[in-house]
Image (cartoon, rainbow, N blue to C red):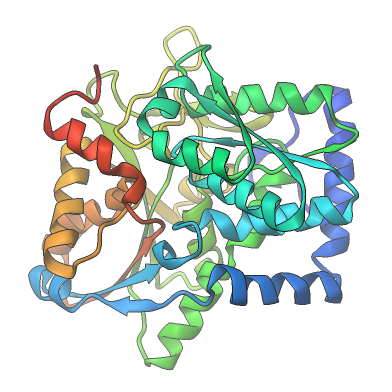
Length: 391
């Protein structure tokens, strides 16, 4: 298994961390080929998570935009987002490695909830690291994690968001490697984590391809939100070899790309090192990692998974940014036309329909990965309406 996607990826960590990463890599290489492991995971994904998730034809949205629009309904999984696919798989690995505790970072809280859920199911201790700002704006998910038996650490350093949660989790892992497994939630971090997360999330794309075939549809565009990049990697990966299909990742422009208040890494970042990987990173003029700002806690990250940096560099996928206003408008549009309340993260992908559809010269088939539901975001949406999100 290669450490790099083209020029991006690798292991930029101390030797002490490489020991733990090597253990994780060996376990992953073993279990991804293990018949019993895969059968157990498949059964859990079916009976516990609720897979396969539907590929839903959004007839009203299609009429509104004049194109055939399908939603891959990851919002219908147990815990309400795609994060459970990977969290459950890694937790199952941890248990088979005889680890007693799992830890995770989380931004929007969905990965934290998914990890706490998997820990409860599998009888593992669980600790979650979350930026203090995200603890406040995702209070409902924090309560869910605690109800599931997890201990939540509010990180007060730095920007107090997802990037700082990753730092907190990594620091804890380095000090407690023997009995602890770090369940990384996005396709980021040092090798082998980007490959592990992409592998376990690729079930989204596998299902989507089979579902499109069943209804005899050839997809033209696939759109997904991109923060760290797990849901986008999950749906893109199965379609990478078919270059007729255009892959589009959508980042968070926050208050706008021309302001400091955004998280549009691939549209504004430069190559650098963050959290043990070489990728595109938002940096200031001194090369220091910039703080990010977005209404979306799950996209509020100054880096991007190395797979996405590679796909952008090779032009296999394109990446664009939408603002908070555009995101909220798209969220309300889906509510009004389809009776579905999407997560703020997913609403960034939905918002790109407004930019894409008017440019298309022929009727197209478009799949949007609806990565999560919006229950967790009600307070943020309400406060945004009042203009209070940025304090």
